[in-house]
Image (cartoon, rainbow, N blue to C red):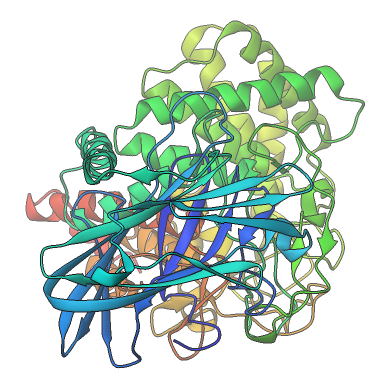
Length: 624
């Protein structure tokens, strides 16, 4: 494995409160504890020397490695094949349900399927993004690492044999440990790394197997709740499980990605921290999961959203009542810092923690939130009284404040503009609130909302449409296209076969689509306050599939969809972007990408069923 593995060369494991990445050569190179947004324990993904890691691999360089998930689970298997034997490491985190926990377990079970294999284990934690020192205490049963700040990490061992029979006692190497051991065909062993786990102890093979069995049973039961029966079931299932793995169980809030600092261009500066809950990403994530029948998850996020809405309505002083992002517990201290001591993935600096975009004005969040609320209502999860009162206050604010520049959906740092997407989503917000009020007879300023909604519609059609380029554009004073507008027909702002929309779709195909992959926009034509370029944006590719399917261009949609699968990694996981050589870029895995995969699969499957049943009108396919 290179000093910095490809972003795609990872699998994801987690316990619903935090997560870890495991490379294809058996190295845990990213892990934050006790929460997704906590300081890192392992972060060699962002600094090979100072970040820390936990590796288990053969004690030879002559091996071939393969990686897969145990079917229908989040248990990751890394297999090693050598001339002498075949071994595997099975990695998972036992699921934690209920209140936030300080104790988290990373289980690494080792077995040999054929012949024998000598393994080497290296454990080098680096607490607080490599900024905190720690002590090490080694015992026969394992080791314990302690920081002055009170963080502890305990290594328990399982199936350890005496040194004379191929086993060994871990030895201290610098601030970490190293051990070598041999397993023969049919033998198993392993380790459990536990935060706040007390003194090291020997774990019996039976206990290790129970952890495996319980984790397997949880994930299989969860997947059995899915109502999805369409085509591409395997990809949809893996995407759903990935979204679940990135959802903080105690609050129901999903993070945008499991990582921080991975670049949108190798060596570039677009290296953000995505371990937080964006109103936009969270709303769309729960929309996707509710489409698969996961109403409990949608309800929990609805409760989290309700709390943010009530807090914001109570504290509003004329400013935007909702922040664009929060921590998973609902707090909003996201001060951006730079980790100057980290060199970044393949030299991509600066490495940032926190997120300076948290205080931006992004008007679109109100539309995505309202659309998620009405989707929950459609699924039988209506908004309660207090939540409705808070929502009406926020919609009153939207009706009064929609006609102003904002920073836009892509969080650019080039100043506020009259972004078409922000205006369109304000229309969505008011439209959904009006529908909810009418559906349930709720008290509201419906007349005021309707006036604002209709004014938005007319403004977007007059100023968002550029007659010279025959397309809706990024903002009112540009000819630049923006693929966020692919949501316009998806969210019923415009018919998917409206001539203006079909013209926009053709313009996007000419300017933003590259062999089925879709760019967000052209940074060179629309300066965004940052240096460098970026790859194609995988969310936008799946939105493009959805828009093609709705426009009746089904064969084109299917081909684009199938092509996109070839850019997923060996496990079906996607990061944020794709580079010019087909490699993955950006934080990993990316919720945006996986939720869009799910939604486009549902749309495409529905439209294909219509065509198979003879229900697709020929005029729709020919409307271009």
